[in-house]
Length: 83
Image 1 (cartoon, rainbow, N blue to C red):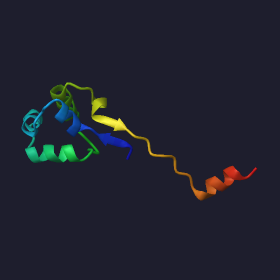
Image 2: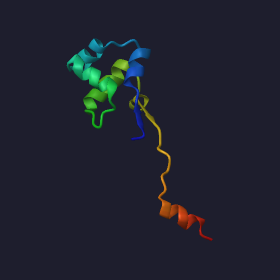
Image 3: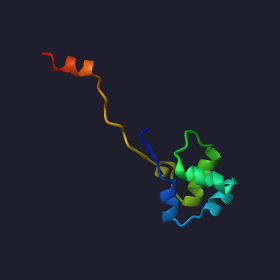
Image 4: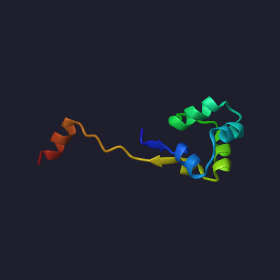
C-alpha cells in the first residue's frame, strides 16, 4: 500500500504518551501499541477525531502518501517498443 502511518511520529513530536492516547480513545494501552505499529485498514471516525484533537492535527497529517512505482508487464513493454 502507498500509505505511511505517522501516528508514532506525531505522538513523539507532541510528547503524547500511550496512556494519554488510550485514555483519550477509551481503549486499552495494547490497542494503542497496535495502532502505533500498523497502519489501520479501517479506523472509526470518532477515533480519528480524538486523535486529531489530542495531537492538534488534521487527518491528512497522520498519513503520507507514497505512490508505488508504475509496474508494466512484459507484454505492455513490447507493445510500446514496436513502431
